[in-house]
Structure formats: structure tokens, C-alpha cells
Image (tube, rainbow, N blue to C red; front, side):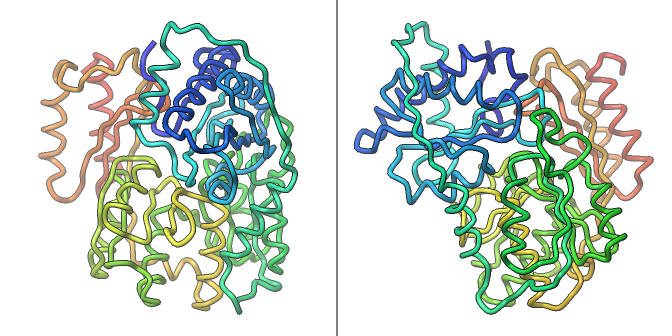
Length: 445
């Protein structure tokens, strides 16, 4: 059946393996069984939230039933952003946390993300043990869901975010536009920024179970850009469906990704003596322009694999206070061990107010090199050296780019895709290189 856990949890189409109610129930049982062995002294409870997908309640129930089969109850936080779990776990008497969400994926998809009791995503060793248990032939014991509602979870998370806002700084009267992707931030983001006094225009905050991420949010900031320009807003923020990342739009309506945020935040933290050892953690997908800008500013970079869990591991390894990836996952070590789009939006807003500068100015140092990313459907994840002529073609592309560009080829952690990224100064050239690699993968090279 293959590996369950990808870059960020278990993902798939709701109703199809592994996102059937039967298998999610089994996954819950496996998770509880491993928790009971690894965390014997902790309460037999798991804190669970979900996003706004129509399949969420059914899969939430299935997970609770599986956990019940292992002797665990569920503390139900309802619809909340994924990082709310990371924020609240350390203060709760529970063994772990879980999120029913497929993040930025379409409404027909769903998934399960797991967190340890300290708010960090479960490491690979935990996931491997849960996976072995879930895929075993062991019969599932009698199950019964034990669910306790936690209606104060939303307010507790809002208070956590309010506490992250710097004292003496105000957003009073400052115009902002928020795109909530019809997702988990819909009931949180507008309330947060209005409490801070901002003049808020809200887009895509009417979830109906089917419209999450549909032409809106972090993957589709076009409408946000238009509204920012029309209203003269200081900043636009587009969240993804589960709220763990954000893409920004500057005052001129130009979209700014996680690389731009990392650059602006690194400069800001460094001036205030909060950029530990001058180190910033980025991923292999971070733009060459960001890497060169950070180097020019005298910062050291630690490069990790894709995924905010890998960024966090890099931050723990180096002691860095800041890390992120272009998708919009940015981690501020002072607050959380995972990406949080709302927290990132707060930090960027505070940065603008405290410096008095425009976001376009704060991010202008990085020359964004064109990137072409092709997603090639695959039937299986073959080793690249087993694909005829692939390594030879890749070597030719790298030789042609020299030190003016780079390539990255990797299998998706959540979908049956081979991702081919080529970066360089000339878009037409890198497009041709990317397409030549894709043709080889497809057997047309």
C-alpha cells in the first residue's frame, strides 16, 4: 500500500484509501497505541481540530473512534487553524494533538496531521511506528468515540496570538485586506485584527464545505491584489485552508511569498539583536535571489528539505530564531515550533508599523530569479537513476546553467508527482530546460 505519511501528515481524496472512515479509524487506533507506549504518564486524551471541508466531521468521528479503541478520548476544538494545536498543546493536559485537514489542497481532499504534546509535529520515528501499526494485520478492538467539546479553544488561541503582539504598537486605523480561503482562519483572522484596531476588509470567509481554497487564499492571491490596490490598503494577507501559512500582497498589489517575509523578518530581528547567531533556515525551494540577499547582508543560511517540520529541525540544530519556505510557512522560534499564517501576519504588520516603511521597500533587496516548476504525474516513485537518460539530461541542464541557476528534482510528499524546478535569469531558457526533463520522465525525451 506504500508509505502513509508524506511531507505533512497523511493526505488523499476523502473517501478513498487512506482517507476512508475505516482506515482513519485504524490510524486513530494505531496513534493511540503508540502514544500509550511512548507517553505512559500522560492523560489518555488527544486534542483535535479540523478545517472547513465537508468531509471533516465524518473523518473527525472516525479518528475519535479509533483513538477510543486504544483507550483515548478526544478534546474537540472544532474548526480552528492547524497552528492552534501547536499553540495550545503545551498548556493542555493531553498526550498529543491532531488536525483533520488537507491544507491548501482542494475541498475533495483531506488528511490527518499529528503533533506531540509539546506542540511539535511528530518526528519520523513516531510516524514510522504509527504507520507499521496501522498497516499491521492486528484486529481493531471494539471502538467507541469519547468526545469532549472545548468551546474555549478559539478564544484561547486568539489570546495566544494577542500576546504575541508587541506592547506599545498599534494597528489602529491601518487598512488591511485578509483572504481567509473559506478555510479555518475565517472565524479567527478578522476577529484578531479588528481587536488590534485595524480597518479590515475580509475576502473568502464564508465556508460551505466545498469552497475551501477554490480560486482564493494563498494559492490564488489575484483577487486580494485587486482589492488592496482598490482600497489603498497597507497590506494584504492570503491564508491557506488550514491557516499554517500566508502569502502577502504589498501596498502596490504585488504578491510576496515566504522568501520575502523571511528576508524582511531577518533584517528586522537582526537590528533588534534577536537573530540568533545571524542564522536563517531556508529550504531547497528558496529562491536563489533570497540566498544571495541573505549572504550580502552577512547572514548564514542553513538549507533543509521541503516542509516546515524540516525547517524546525534545522532551527533546533543551529539555534536559529527564524526559518521559512517560499510557500509561506514561516517559523518564529520565540513563539511556535511550526508555521502559523496568523502569527506571521502579525509579525509582518508589526514590522511595518515599527519601521514606518512599505513592505515593498523592506523586501526590495532580493532579486527574485524566475523559477519554473513542473509537476509530472507518475505511477510510481522510481529512483531517478532508474529513469532512462534522466541523469544524463539533468547533467546537461546543470552544465548549461552553470553558476547562474540551479535545478531541483524531487517527488511530492503528498501527491503522485515528480516536481521539477529550474531556476535562472532567463524564463524562456529555464522553461525549455524544465520541459526537456519532463519529457524524459514521460518517456518522450
